[in-house]
Image (cartoon, rainbow, N blue to C red; front, side, top):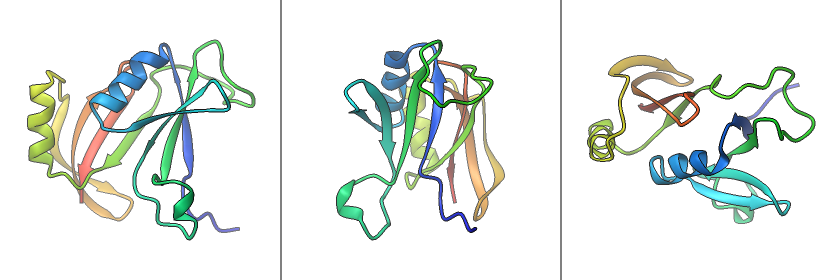
Length: 137
């Protein structure tokens, strides 16, 4: 077996609307409603052969705490994720935008190691206190 890429992940959250507001209005993702009531956040480029099916390559499905969809992780809890997003926007521009939006940067800029090498990162929190790392290669 060889795994190619991550398709989606699930975040368990206290309030889907607050989460959507943060990821759409702060991080620039797009809300998607599927299967009538499920909510996802879509982002990133689609590089696969079937690129016409979706303009985005990744998504985060949202589960509201206490109303998760099955199957689910064994120990669901809000605020337990640590996510790193790569941006083509220079980190200096991102920092200024976050300051304008009055979003607290917990740490950074600092050097870290990403999947493909050295990255420069900043850290902030989403509404559920998940750690969000935004980075440039």
